[in-house]
Image (spheres, chains in turn brown, blue):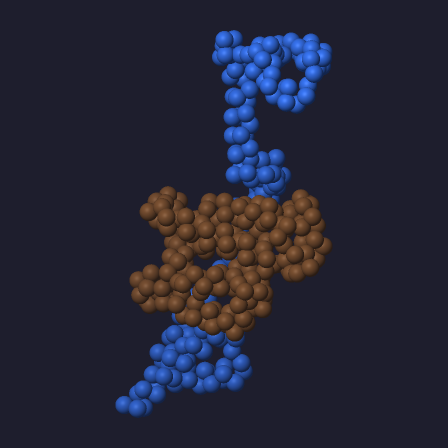
Length: 184
Length: 165
């Protein structure tokens, strides 16, 4: 994923639907990745991705075309992810993955989904500030300075959150997989 | 004991450095120092492998083949009239409610009016005769009021029937 054409965010800000289309094409992979890491299922991640783009389009007047697009856009995506997680917590039991998730045939598919679920569960155990930092680092193409802009924190704080977040994630992931020997 | 503590401290520090190395933050000097520690510490060497595994898991790219229709779905949702910017419902609802109340107030008398409750033009003039006198309206003025008709001002007879006569 390279840099986006600087003209696209300007046209997006004016309400140009073609620019929105270009933005979807450019960012869909990373937004879907964030959704998958936060929400766990492909359907939820797809639904989330659609909401992120539509929501960003509706809020485009809040974007300053004189500033970089990515930090603003990912802030919208994170806020929406936060909201979805909050709603899930408000509905008891809604955070448990549906049974059909593990029922698809094919061992490799099952193992892959199981792994995704372990990743998601481990991320959910982290403090939100660590979780968001890690998700941005691994799913977006943002530089550390841009992550700092997105989260409104200093570069040093980004590094600290990433370090602590990774250490906490490792611990939670290993625990979820049945101890350190569970890691492959 | 002190040596053991120092060794433990080193391992704690090494784990921080392992995380930093995995994230790509580590300077050349610290990388060298970490490598030296790993060469002599089996526990931390195992940890280093585990960090690599965790990084692989986090860096895995999801299968994006299911996203083939996402641009179309977004365009349909963003471009549909229902999604276009309009006044928020919380602003529209009170206006609609007020309009409904007004409509009921206007329409209800048409179905429920009782002629016995209405005043004729003569009764109005009599009731307000003192006021008319106070305002200095002459008999001629009163005559013109008596001769006034809504119809002459283009008000439909069906509606004029419900106005003050």
